[in-house]
Length: 472
Image (cartoon, rainbow, N blue to C red; front, side):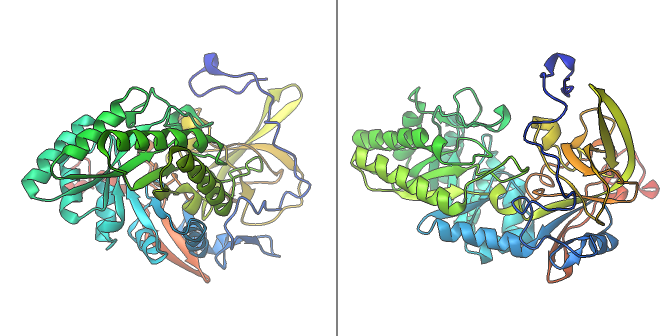
């Protein structure tokens, strides 16, 4: 039996009707605590509750679909990362999810902020985030982005190319300011993750190669530029990483580069940013390390390699994003249709169509990301059946949860909840099929607050120059 790949049958892999890790539950109403925010429970009445409100109450207030962020859980995870990595700079990776309120939560919990576009930078500034605690990323920063970063006082600019160095040299001279920069390097270490989110191998768009020597050349150039202050280097090996094994070789190579720079210039650069990419549990098969385990492992790796190169431990930084907001968020959908499909070998699969899809979570279609799901608006005594939660879009690859067990009596109007949806769901959402994007709300102490309002068709039509204003 094969799963059809979204690109066609030639790309399909021979697999069983369900993955080996997926086990039929003895209690279809049970929650795997590793997947859900801290306040998520199932009430005696059977309803799933988040932040003191049932999902039925949340949907009654917000409509469906909706992204629900557990504020206490989000803040707790942010604080845990800061405490676990005491003495480090902890940057929240805003690409995972950012809005003005989240930027304020991050500031209040004492973290710094990593932004990677004009939009993210502007949101952070409008939210009142201290620009000195920001780092600007991006492999193709425009002059407008760099100008805003320089004039607003962004603390670190992570330089990604020789062209960017040239832009910074022109702009710093024009504006009469200095730029504090880190050089982004590729270490040749490929994280064990999907090709699209593994970012340290050589054949990709980010950074300067250590092995080719271009990283050292870029560092020396920045060091000699009159208004650029080179403070260190930045490395990122990928995303959804569960332990520190992949960081060992990368750290050795980045510290060796710092040693080579010291030999060439006599200067010991003070900072090393190890990036982010720390994973979370999306299914029962995932077992990520805790922040404290990661802090211990990374600190030991850096200390060991620094001793080997005879250098002091630099000021260290990391960039968790998904690990903070991912488990804090839950996506809630309403079932529209169900159908049972015979898949061969005596197996059936239940297709459960909901009022969302790849427009509000592109990750399963983009790189076969796995998710879990539960019946959320009530409990059930029905037997569990192999199910696939799919969206409303005109695409065969419009799949939200590829493999899960849900009760046999799931019916139209039921609510389905997908945990670990706080990261990259809303931030990567689209308007495919002219579908308005869902709202993001936070819940705390039984109250709902809007973080990002629901889009409307009027919002979409307002951009269509072919529709007269009076017809919108």
